[in-house]
Length: 432
Image 1 (cartoon, rainbow, N blue to C red):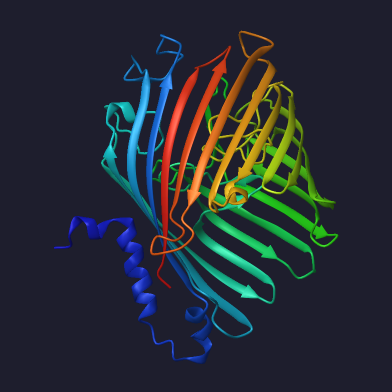
Image 2 (image 1 turned 45 degrees about the vertical axis):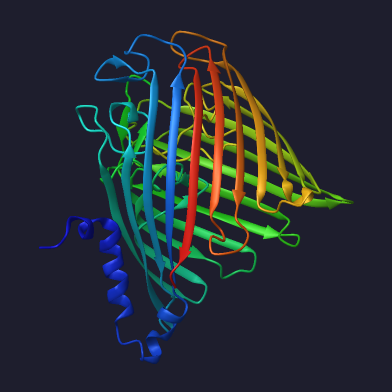
């Protein structure tokens, strides 16, 4: 009988990697498959504590079995095996990527609801463990790659979230081409979604934030391109995506960085527009986002100011559970992406290498939003403050082990006020 632990997705992936390694790679055609392979095992220890500071009605506030939840707390140990082969030799090269994902609960039962560290059962109890195996086949011709299967996809119009125990993954197919210098073209389709706190694979869906709630679409189709020039200092990108029968969305972006004396100045400008698509399962949709972030770096200091404005009756459109990282004011706890919301941010990053402590960094930011439109109120406001103190060991047997402490506060006219702490320890082990 196979031990229970060996039936976890992590060890299923390990078995697959071992089987690949045992293949007869003496063949010249398969040489690059192994020679260029990379295998890492990430050990992630994640503690999460969130206090809800207002609200008593479980119908509108966080609740477990309709009982008011004043705190969400959980602690997990995760194992993330990332095995990526090279390509076989020949006109068309073939390869395989495997993600083995497994997380164990160290602490957290009913109080773990709303941490999104673990799946929550119908009785409100947190699962003892969860995980899954994601496998993707790939083929390469010249500078064009086709990938089919499941993986951690990060695109401007579909950003998998890796902010908890395990990363989000999608099942689908993607074509990426770099045949023209400086130009990268993308196209593809995704049809299944595995969220960061779930072992299942669900339909691609949009959480409308309206009485319609979570609306399942059909396939998620996308195409886009990014062109880099001016010594890679300037990038222009354009994207279009459709969650069939729910929404369609377009995004254009311009980024630029410029050395000015001892300073490096940067800009990130973007415009997003979205509306309903096909049979419009979520009803009529209308969303536009205008945004810009401007940075200035000198020595060990980086300063940033950002502005983000939404218009229309719909919040920012994204697949359920994905990151809001496309938005310049997206943070650890909030994306400031409500209908009609205007928000601005000030941020400062400091690298303590300037004081003789390489590997130690500190980030502080403040975001303020107003003009929020809800079903019951216009011109609601919110603000958030976030800090992250991080240290990465630079040498020795624990080299690259990182420790991050994230401390956040959110205050809102509509919704829950939050006070939050996270402690995240990551240790990447290089196996191959």
